[in-house]
Image (cartoon, rainbow, N blue to C red; front, top):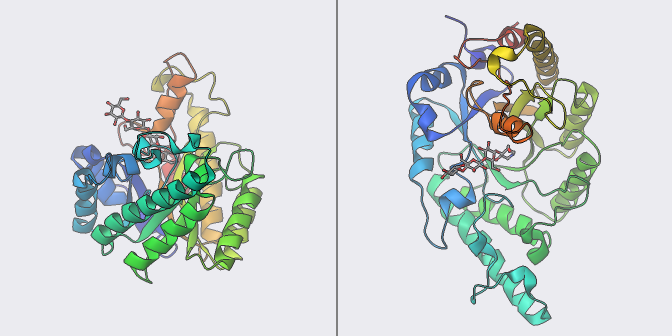
Length: 344
Ligand code: G3I
């Protein structure tokens, strides 16, 4: 009986949610259809799910999400073609099964680099060919910047420098066509030193002719961090390069860093925390709306408080006991104060 969120923002940007295939059914499926007009896979489109072994592509779970989205007229974000995490080890092994990063011979390192780039190309090509008519926005590469600034020293980077980024984007463009929207995605894009580091990387890549259309700002944030000013400046910085912005993984944790102590159960969360969260959501969506010519979608990293990676994180830092509550729908899919805050 409450109004759909996506209709409220129809003039500004799409409203998305991250899902696992099992959430397409039952009550979560109903909430998804009603409130969101965009969808992204929380896990099943990552390299380890799609190509667990070299040459063995598995599209079964990803297909379920694509089918659901098409049946319900939703946009689809693809997450993620290339990432350093949830990537199978075979990408980085030589023909003898030895980790390529251990190779010291210069000639062999050159050869290994070519092999890795071929693997990137093949992975991207097979996926993009299959889904090019279905996907609206692609996370081509995820989390290239190190938390302390500088480029992330992943195996991708150690083996190819920034060439893996280049090859991934160029291959995506080649097979997805000129209308596909290609994003570089990361977290903490609001704050220094990551913000400037990402800005410089993207600027250099663009100057080099790499086909990047936009920046994905994950948005795993807290009640008091980062500031609205930093958030606004970041969107403006990337827009000044002629790029689109998308908020790709929004959730507002109840905690600081580390998430300790955490409330042991959902019932332990005081009402004033939900009110503070509603105010934070209010301020944030007011900002997004103000910048809506620079933001084409806002995606939550989940549907409702009953399923969020932040619960695992709260447990991890609190001896296995702890919950978080980052969304605008509660554990029972009922609206929270945050829902009214973004609908007003
Ligand atoms: O698939 C296995 C399953 O076979 C096994 O039984 C089970 C037992 O723990 O684990 C399952 O894998 C888990 C997977 O989620 C699917 O549920 C992994 O252990 C778990 O680590 C993985 O966590 C995901 C995480 O990315 C991995 O880094 C979270 O669900 C997902 O929300 C999170 O999403 C990331 C974005 O992709 C990138 N940005 C940050 C964001 C939050 O960390």
